[in-house]
Image 1 (tube, rainbow, N blue to C red):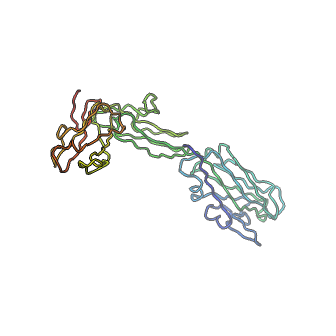
Image 2: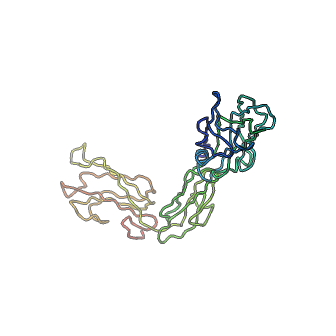
Image 3: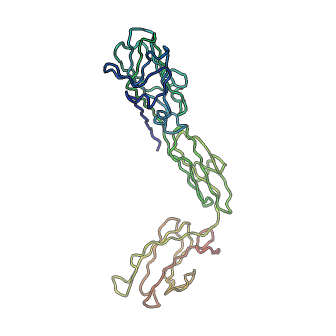
Length: 338
């Protein structure tokens, strides 16, 4: 089920150089007990930039293509002298998404911008340029920021590749938990003798999504697709469960054993036989202990092996079960029209 994933990046004092790159900016400055993550002051220009580096972007964006649907941003900021011209702009791809003006003097105020959903935010990816543009009235008026916190919100989806019919050998998916704007490739391997039909949004293969055997898409919701390559006639697979008793005798309490089995396909006939002491286990060999007609694929069938049915006396018996599917094949691979 789709969900919201939040990514948080905090850049306090001492972490500026870890997550930011500078143009005319100093990082992790402390003056008279005032800690600053970044500061513009006597840096050779009245304008500087602090840009989120790859470490910061990797922490904020869960994949190279994921796009957030919302951003929160908080920063403590101030200036050293009284002036109306200094500012700090938070910019994404050159677009200002938060403007800090009228900065506090000789102290820091907290500036918050919760729930930003402008296009510069929702269109951003890990490769976007996120930066602080910092301007001062003069080279001697310090402008600084501290206690930075970004929170980005992403949609994440669940995707799966399943099969419809028995013509597909296997399916795979490149990314089962993509974020919004991540691409996903659905791939299938078709069995010999089958004809590829396409990827469908329903198991009944009525709503075609793509006829490409390798299909790439960018989901904007949970997505399950079914690979369909028609139906081919193939033998059913019979799977035996463990018997209730591995040893039986003529004693009343232990004179029967119940065996269970399932089939990969719908059956219209099945038979169970007891084969004595390494005898032939081919279909039709051994003593018939039980038989039946219909059994749905995946349903559990059961047989009761009675001591009196083991007519060869004491010894080791192997129970074999063969099924005939509605497509005309026995589970040993032979074809027979009943």
